[in-house]
Each structure stands twice: as C-alpha cells, then as structure tokens.
Image (cartoon, rainbow, N blue to C red; front, side, top):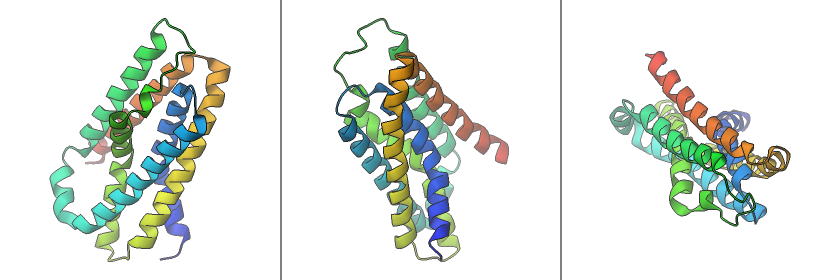
Length: 188
C-alpha cells in the first residue's frame, strides 16, 4: 500500500476528532498546550488502536458490534454534547478555573466515540489482507495532528464568541452523533 492512502483515510477518520477537539478547545480555560497534547494523544492512540483491533478481529468481532455501534457512538457523543450545552447555558463566571472536559472518563469516552469508524477500517484492511502496522500508525499520527490543531483553534473561537461557543461545541457533538446514527440507519 502506498503512503497516500492511509493518510487520506486518516484525514477522513479524523474529521470527527477535529470537531470534538474544536469543541474541547472552546471549553479549556488554562494550559491550552497541555490540553491539546492530551486530547491529541488520546485521539491518535485510539484511532490507531481501533484500526489494529478491527484488523485483528476481522469479521467475527464486527458482526457482534455492527448492530449497535452507531447507537453507542451517538449516545456517547449526545451525552457529552448535552453536558456542554448545559454548561454553556448556565449563568456563572466564565473565568472559572475548571477543565472538566479533561477528566479521565470524558476523554476516554470521546476517544472511543470518535474512533469506532476506525474499527471498521481495520476490518476492511483485514478483508483485503493488507499489512496493518504502518497504515494504523499513519492514521494515528494524522488524528494526533488534526486533533491538536482542533483544540488550539477552539480557544480562538472562544475568545471571539464567549460562552456561546460551549453551546456550539455541544451542538457539534450531537450533530456528529446524529450523523453517525443516520448514516448507519439509512445505509441498510
């Protein structure tokens, strides 16, 4: 396999990561570089890891999760998105020194939700009997870069739009979840 194909696949898979990272960047109050690094690393590792898991599992595992993977992704994104909208609507000090979105569980949930499609990509690589290590690594690196850029860009939007950007970020997560759900339900 050429190197361009996994880069393009990585870019396509990372669009959800970018949107979520952008939303996270809007809610990060301090230590922006650290937040961007943590989110990018988690998203990149999950994208690469889910590609590897999909490849290793082949068709067996996919047939077990295919029936509800879209519901799982939707539910996870909708819950986090609703929480962000709620926080954006609350009256409170905008300079409050909390970074709730960088807690372990939300980061893991978002990492999983944005990487479910990578599982299917890994399975398709298995069907094509392709080597997986280099493509998975490239997909992970691309997701890292795009997620880092997303978080760093989000803070700039926050300075322009204020607390309204948290509402926008939450809506983006819900729309991504709805898109995943709609795509899977209408593909049959």
